[in-house]
Length: 117
Length: 110
Image (cartoon, rainbow over all chains, first blue to last red):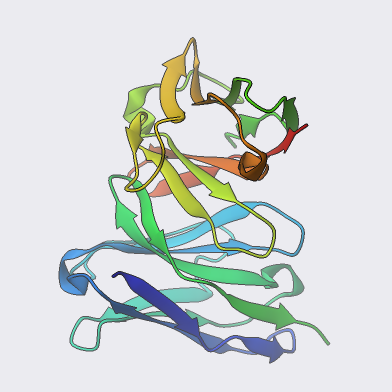
């Protein structure tokens, strides 16, 4: 069965960095686009970034472009989100999700990132 | 900036039918935006219900259906059950590189 397991979340101060990982199994990772979605406490879902299966097309929401970098290692079936210069408004649960037909079909359980001084 | 709109809340009686909608602050939603729908209960990851306007995700009961109604995407739940009480989010692909969620609808079954 498909599994997506995020890790790497934690508490950091504004301006610091953090890298999230998403370990994938149960499907052919190298042929699947992947995405990151976040959800601030008590708020709705917010699309963050997309990476194509080969890593050659990458898109970001405006508020994270230039600070966040999405990447993948198809040999390790792992998706990454490098987050630099973090802000309080980046505080959220971050989900990785498998891209499917312009949406998502599978989701991880999420990793909490807290940015606070 | 284009905003994706959803009803903040809705209620339905057990066994009843409810239609939630997903619109745009300017313009109409069409199948070209590949609308999809997600269900989320508190503390849980989202669950995919509908993709590409009206295709049900694996394991989703046929009580859930997607469509375009007028100028909006729509999610219809027929025969509502207690465990349908959740938040529902739509997602639109405004372009190849822009995907936007609606603000979500909190559905109460009572």
